[in-house]
Length: 118
Image (cartoon, rainbow, N blue to C red; front, side, top):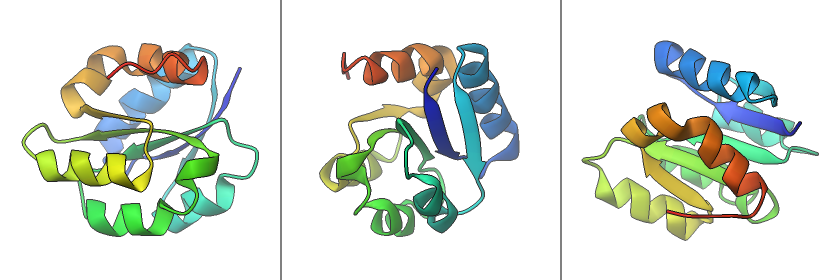
């Protein structure tokens, strides 16, 4: 079981992501703000980050922590610049929201096992 910190501001989609990660056996702590996520990262195995709203501010807040924690981020498929920014900030895997909905637990498990595939 991995310790996951997740910043999921969209309540409906966030509860889906939280549920799939919990069902996969992970201990998920949901952080209401990027700053709260940063404060909870100590000892976390994975950061899950929703980039759908104000992604530039989120990445700026969390960017310093990304090199020390594996990060899985997801974005709206039309926002290619957000994907690029997230990868440049140090996210290990950045996928469209639709892929996260289908494969979120498998993506997290693969990332935790260091089997990163985009």
